[in-house]
Image (cartoon, rainbow, N blue to C red):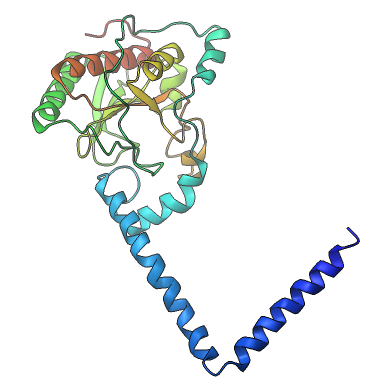
Length: 273
């Protein structure tokens, strides 16, 4: 600690010496004037590429413009959390939350898709299904919602502005998780990669992640959305999971099985067709 004043003095003297050198140089003021422009020239292309990668994810919850991009970069990305760990579910299972609805979940073939670098919207940037698979998924999803209209409504998502979601019907008694999620159960990202967001039982979250079918929402478990929207959006539970977009007809069946398990968990109803 006794050397600290000496170090401070030496640093100050070095800065003063640099300032004297620049001031005495005949072109110093031109160098100093060009410095901000040089920094901008280096920053703008990188920022533009990052903004374009944000737009490439497709519209989602945040504004689909430069303000949305800046907000995500500055407000949401710093709060991203681990998306593949299952310890949080192990603890809940150990405390008694053992019930699950996915009895037979196969291991997903291949590597997990590479994800976008933004906390929201959470999207994959590879392994996007063909148009035929996208159309078939949406057909199966719509038919599922119709079959189960006695317990779920199809309404605009409160989390994704550009897609519909399955919501618990108003005449169904709310489970704690349904109340926490303001009735929203799941939604398909039909304007972009066709991945799916669902809320699952802790045991099923563990199965999904370990079998390679999805990963946790990067802001799950935070109150960020509720605080920023003054309570309009919910506190996102740790059981809020992204399911990767199906690549084949068989994977559509698996994904729809996960959607069914989500409806059973959030509604508390077993009569899901």
